[in-house]
Amino acid sequence: MDWFMERIRLGFFEVRNPYTRRVKTVEASKESVHSIVFWSKNYDAFLRMKAGEKLNQLGFDLYFNFTINSESPLLEPGILPLRRRLGQLKTLASLFGPENIAWRFDPICFYKMAPEGIEEDNLSDFAVISGEASALGIKKCVTSFLDMYPKIHNRLAFLSRKNKVCPVFTAPSPAKKLEIIRRMENHLSKLNMCLSLCCEKELVSRLGKATTVRENACVDGNLLKMNFKGDPETRRDYGQRSKQGCKCTRSVDIGSYDEHPCFHDCLFCYAAPDMDNRLKKDKTS
Image 1 (tube, helix red, strand yellow):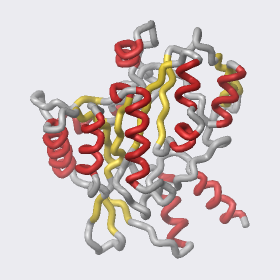
Image 2 (cartoon, rainbow, N blue to C red):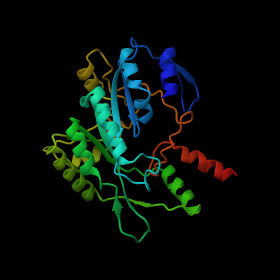
Image 3 (cartoon, rainbow, N blue to C red):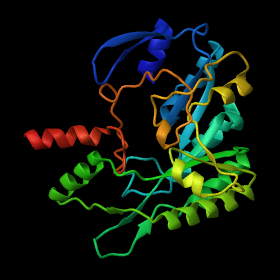
Image 4 (cartoon, helix red, strand yellow):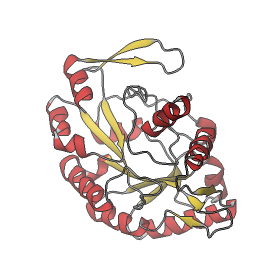
């Protein structure tokens, strides 16, 4: 957050393309930015330094993707206790409005602690979190099922060689996925909440026409226009996983995994947690 707020003060970000390594300058003035979409599992630093209030005073409108999963020191070892995360959710809703928050329960994971063991999942606190979110006035829940990228396989294999306790992730059948999504949909509808699926196009198509489940846009220009007025970008970003169902609007990502690796060290992370940097160092040492 210190870095982010300093770049806001300077009025621009320098963004390095992770593939070409070229650096481009992104203007960060109120005149050039319609809204800022944050995405995190931990808004502690953001709230502590009153970043949102400062950004609002500068004229920026804010939207929040807040991932809150069930408490699991195994799957998400660096995450704050659930109660503290729910406290952050309450503060964000109070300060910036529940209509400007999407709660993400993501990803849904199935795993075993041994190849022949009992299959477990991370759905245990879903009802608790949804109840809290609904009470705050939040209407949107986003979810998806774990995608097993090669980097996740490599991460777990390396941790196993280091004699670390690691789960063996399993893939639920299409029928089981449908059952889970329909159960979540029914539960959320009673709380006046809607369910969206992130990059699960095939699963959405199997739900049928009667479903209330929708394909998700993490950055939704039409929603930002409805909430904040003005003239944001509303064209689809086909550079994302559009074939898998991504409905995101074009936007500019100013984040950098290289410069700001995540310290939550979630075992299922599709990105680049700091744990991966430590594993690379271990391999070369």
